[in-house]
Image 1 (cartoon, each protein chain N blue to C red):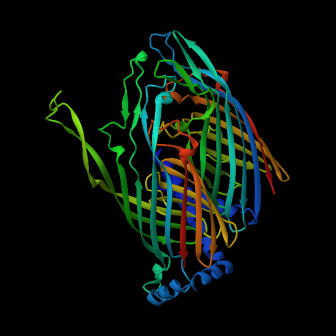
Image 2: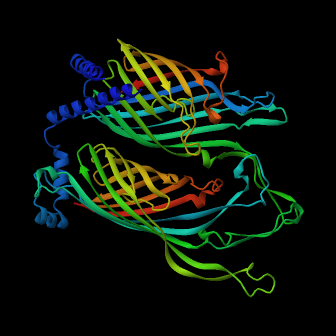
Image 3: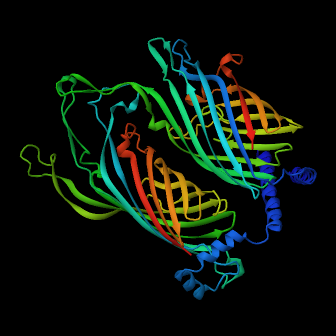
Amino acid sequence: MRGLITSIIVLFLALGGAVDLPAADDETRVLVHGEYGWYNKVYKDLQYKDQMATTFAVEMVNAGFEFRRKDAEGNTAGAGMVCTRIAGGSVYNVNRVERQPRTSLLVPYLFTGIDTGMGALELGIGWYITIERAEAVVYYNPDGTEAVDTAAGDRVNRTKSHALLNAALRIFPENTLHFKFRYGRERFNGIDSLCNAAAIIPFGRHALEFYAAMPSDWNRRYMPQSNQRYGIAYSVRIDRIRVGIHAGYLSFNHRGGGDGNMPIFDKENFSAGSELELSL
Amino acid sequence: MIRTVGVLLVSVIITFTGTGLVLAQTTTGTSPIEDETRYERNTGIIGAIRNAIFGESESGARKSKIMVWGGAHQYLFGYKDVRYKKGDEDSSQMDYMTADAQYGGMELYVTGFPGISRALRDARFGVNVALYRHEAFTERNLYAVPAHGILEETVPDETELGRNGKWWSNIGVFAGNDGKWVGIDLGITLRATVINEKSRYKLDPNSPAAPNETYIKTDGRGLLFDDAYLVPNLLLRLGQETMPHFTFSIFRQDFDPAYGSIMSKVVFPVTQYFKMSVGGYLWQTQAGFMEPAVCFLGVELAVRAGIIINYPDEELERVGIKDSVFGAFSLSYNW
């Protein structure tokens, strides 16, 4: 263990000595990103004796932007928003219907932080707003007849909406091998990659990123349940523009209690997207 | 796993320690703007008194504050009403009633004791007090629907103490260090609940119908302690105060003792005289708010308006917008 830590320290010092830190200038970045994939609704299949959990898929589209400004001293501030749109769908399950309501997730957020060149820590606050297609609310009159209290329509689901702290941690400078931990920051999806960690390998104008999104169902009431997703991303910088593509693979469906295992080669396991970042 | 976490932890510590040392070497002292601000803060009457007691700091005045704050919201009591037809969602049969609620508090802290020791140059000590009350709920009678076998009901029912008005008191002490980039205060808060019990239901031994099985409504005992316990308090700041920065607090700052004891803010000092904070409650409710503030000669007046998104009570899922908005203010003097 001690040897490993020593080697890490040596590696750090070597990197710190060998790498030129990015120039300490004011910098503004605007990132836009999009993604197409599938949301997999979990349900217990009543056709089978073991009633094993299975899923049905509905389309999911994700888009977002982030504005980030850093001054020469390293003070950082920014804001962004992600919108994840999940289509509605349903399947028959023997004697009942399993439904996935049409859902829009809006995640606006703000953050501030410190970027020292060798590392960055940014913290902020945002809101995870879930808008769902809801059924009509009907009540009984004293004579037993029914009346509509609220018509069916898109409504904010308060149970699934909450305030959301966000965080981004970067270790090592951006122009060398560096690591990132992101929670509700940068390029993410409101469902599958809200919390993710990445290793980024720049080589010249190009960069390769490997990331893993962590499932989170610590608190069913307040926290969104994301999945274990692995992904790879590639980007190239052309002058002040960075263009990238990414693809993800859902390895384990954690929704509905972690029982929604899916066949490995289902197309619903895959997602793909792109990003564009402008540095000013 | 442990090894990986250990390696990552060491890397983080080294990164920030190293860069902190570099910063310490490259940014000698404070910026002229910051010194000017601190000088201005030190020219107040309270600043002069503080200097007389503790001695003037080498780096100029420190960030000490006295603040009063107050606010109001609707306190909600949720219940199940079977007059709503049961739908797919559990919330389809939920309803709620409201009571006016108000709160107020005071916070005082002093930062910097160079007269005692240079090590205490950025040390901070303080106290805060907050009070909260909500009025009693008015009983609501729900009609019977014989066609569906639904009986007449009254909410809240007689066993539910929520019908009574409540008071909360919070008394906290804290200490910490207010550095240039990071500030952390830790402390302890005594939280006590006081109930204003207006009525109780008592067995009626003289009931002609069913002696000792029928309850009659009697006067309550008035104000009484319901619960008292200790909780930690915390204030974390990341980023320079004169720049956009992040704060996370537990029972600190201008908190709402019932619906916003844990909160977070992102503060944007737009000009010397104006700053905008955007934040959210994280416990007991989940909320978002905006808080513009005007600042002049160390006096700061902030007004907060926000909306609660999520309530801790599972029965509070279909809440109207006007019942979930809240407002607050704070007035402080900084020296």
